[in-house]
Image (cartoon, rainbow, N blue to C red; front, side, top):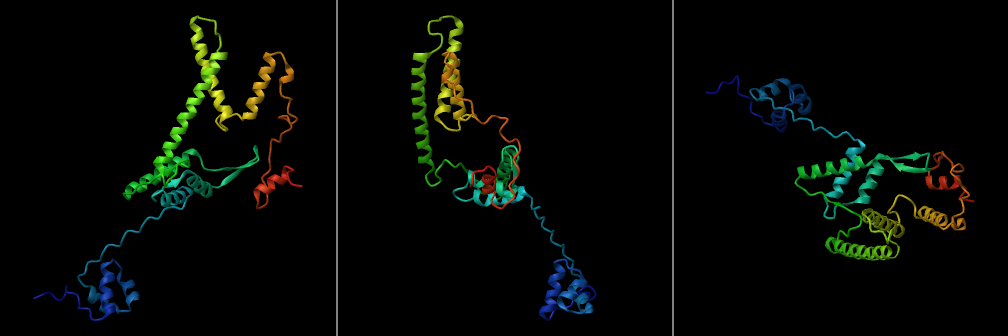
Length: 271
C-alpha cells in the first residue's frame, strides 16, 4: 500500500493538470497559484512528491554590435547557393559601421577596415561550419550562374594580354635596350631591371588604376623627363595653375541631407 503522505493528489481539471506541468517545468508554487487560480492547499496536494524541474537556461542573446549585425546579415547571403558578392559584403559593412567625413580630402570614408572585413568573413565561416552549411564569398568579377566558363574566359583573356605585353616589351628591348654595346657583367643586370621597369610602365599606362599614381601625373613626369634629356624644356608640361598651396587643407563636412550636392555646391560646381 502506497504511503498517502508522499503520493500526490490526482488532478481532475485542466487547471490541475497545468499545475503539475508547471511544477515539472520548475515554476515555484506561488507563481503556479497565480497562473492557474488553484488554491494553495490543492497545489501542494497535487505537487506533493513531484520534484521541481530545472528552469531552462536563459538563451544568451547577442549584443547588437556593428560586428554581430554585419555578421548576421552577411551570413544570410553567404549560405545561399550563389553566396554573397564582394560589393554586397562591403555595402553591409558600410551600413553597419557608418562613415566619417575626411576633412583632408573632402569625402566620406567608411569606418570599417580590412581587419573588420576579415573578422566578419571568419565569423560567417565559423557559424556556417557549426550549422554544417557552406559559406561562399563570391568575387564581383565572376558570373555566379556560370562560374567555370566565366573564369576560363578571363584566364584566356589574361593569357592573351600577357602574351601581347611580352611582345611589346621584347620589341622595346630590341630597339631601346640599355647598354646595347656593353658586354661586361653588369649589363645583364641593368637590362633585367630595365625590362621589368618597361613592363610595369606599359601596364600602368594601359590599365587605369593599376598603379597608385594617376596616369595623367605619370605622363606629365614622363614628358618633363623627355624634355630634360633632349634639352628641350618646351616639351615639358606647363605648370598647373593650381599649386599645392592653393588647394584647401580642410574641407568642412556638408550639413544638409544630400552630402554630394552640399559638397558640389561648396566647391562652386553649382550655379
